[in-house]
Length: 230
Image (cartoon, rainbow, N blue to C red; front, side, top):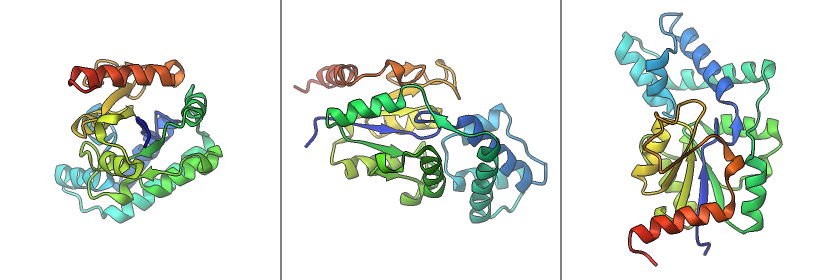
């Protein structure tokens, strides 16, 4: 069994796709509410990293709507497909290098996302990365999205590692909260949210270029030692 592993959120961490994802979400909300609701700062803080059920329930309760979750999910994926056709996504700085390092060191890793599997598969296909992620845990696999820790705990089970041996990279407030609730070592990646907004993370970084396997080992060793583990 590996000593430790890494879990990545997708949009905003591995994929430079947060702009496009938010644009698709903006379109989906605007079109599904006939222009009554737009994605402002307060709504963004609530929905970012959450599952579609939570988003739709919030919209319906707050605005007296009756949006169907399945219809919303399908429409949001269609919006995402339209957006990335005009504004292609890319891999984030440092992501490929870190994946290479993890593979060379035989450190297992996974994607854990509040997005549906169809969206992740689309992004991976567009970027040519489908073969690099044998373990993907998405909203399709759990009953609740972030900040519920279910998606991270399921990835831990699939990786065969205890939560305290996993380092999570997240760019959303809800994602950091979920990682902390799962008992994992959370690393916030700025972009969608500021360093201050991600301050509940154990570490906060600008992107993955500064990350190496020895650094990850040091972070985890310090964390485990602080808990009295050898």
